[in-house]
Image (cartoon, rainbow, N blue to C red; front, side, top):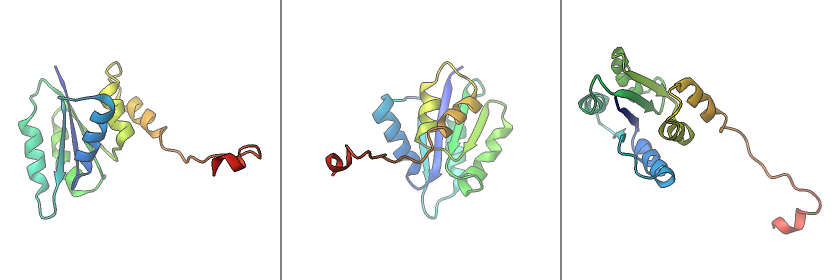
Length: 133
């Protein structure tokens, strides 16, 4: 059984995620990115996914928006027992799924990715005030 990961989105978001993941983690032969272009049909994306896996594969589909046309179309894939669809994907989640080969627990991978979402800000002390600018 091999793991296949499909990134799906509106326009080129999925393709950009794939490029970013491969910049960080190297080439990922089991990672495919598909984007819905203006005027396109989301069913074509679902068909491309269906054409690229078998019942013996573990399939994870990471989509951009819950309730969006691409994820809505991909929902029918989840009728197959080897397919999981997750909406709201981001770079942290894709990296978790790609790099965390030891954990098969997608819920844990999602939680680890969620922990990466936080506000960041520098805290200046009086000693540092002038050296920053």
